[in-house]
Amino acid sequence: MNRERIPERVVHAKGAAAHGYFTVTNNVSKYTKANFLSEVGKQTPVFLRFSTVAGERGYADTDRDPRGFAIKFYTEEGNYDMVGNNTPVFFIRDPMKFPDFIHTQKRDPKTGLRSTQAAWDFWVQQPEAFHQLTILFSDRGTPDGFRFMNGYSSHTYKWVNEAGEVFYVQYHFKTDQGIKNLSSEKAAQLKSEDLDYATKDLYESIEKGDNPSWTYYVQIMPEADAENYKYDINDITKIWPHSDYPLHEVGKLVLNRNPDNFFAETEQSAFAPTHMVPGIEPSNDRMLQGRLFSYPDTHRHRLGANYEQIPINCPYRARVAHYQRDGPMTVTSNHGGLPNYEPNTLGGPVADPKTAWHKEPVSGTLGRHSFGEPDDFCQPRALYKKVMTEEQRVNLIKNTADHMNGVSKDVLEKAVKIYYKIDPDYGERIAKAVGVKSPMQAKL
Image 1: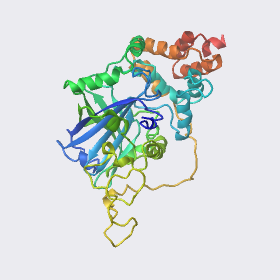
Image 2: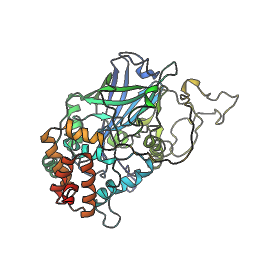
Image 3: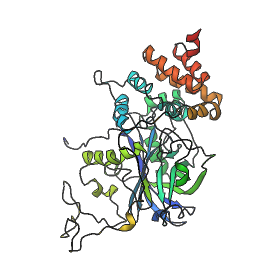
Image 4: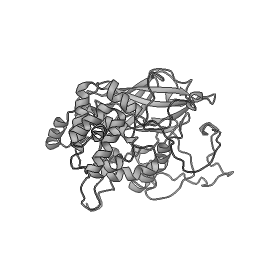
């Protein structure tokens, strides 16, 4: 019993998952050579894990938090992982700040308690975070379980077709059950009554045959558009307006089978954006580039060097052909007597030119560069003024102010100044709700 536990995930520690299948409903072969998307009607087995982000494994499912939305497609060319969230944007765009951000969401090193002071102290120094914060403290910050929320890639990816043409894409998985959210009061009630509310809801709905589904769409941008687009297409704190790049339906994802064993499947599942197939490649999104390293690294720490041999992670529909050998928990034939070096004349695997990534010309100075001076307020302004109803704005202000309880006055004043830059009405309401002067009041 002493050795039954493995390290929990640093983030996305608590989750629930299910098996299912993905079916192509529209032909997208002119945009990507990915085999699992090659023809209408083609089906691919999937495993989808939902999660909360900041809390530990025993934390409440109804916590105000983004939700992870990670899909493993078991394709004939190997496993393809789409590792996303239920929000289309993120708090930061610099991967070097990701450990700092997560530290603010975890427990204070002195008190051992979670600290809203740390969270807001960090956020007010990262103005790009306020787009995500406007979503997080809206009604969508507490989804009603996992079945009634969307999933997004958030990142930009490259699709490459057989001719070598590049298209930039962003993914949208729209729930077919409709969006449902919990009020802050209802979420708090459920937190005291049932910590596993969303986990139970997903499991029981599938057990009784009420199988949840999502329609998969992509936004598609030709490579030539990217250089001069009004926003940096690789900035994860920004969306692409649908008026510029509308949604194209790709297929249907259905969950229809619960795991047989929670630990063997849900807990040991390991998703990484490095798990790709020909025709799908990473963009130069800096956060994505950081994740390409971070995710496999954490899996090797948590599950071992051969985590991809664990059945739930095994690319069972493709022949694994590489030169990795040995290591702890090797449970395969270890590639028998084949050589473990390349090149060789003894029948070892050979590189397949079809798997080579698209070549991209580059020029300039290599180094850590600033992001310039992007407009970080135009999109949350549009969300607040044009998308939200008055009722949703009222809820947003209350939820934000409630979270700010106990935050120091100087940090509150900095936050109000940022909200005021987004929209004066937004800033005035936050200032009033938290009891500090707005920039307009300070001038009087």
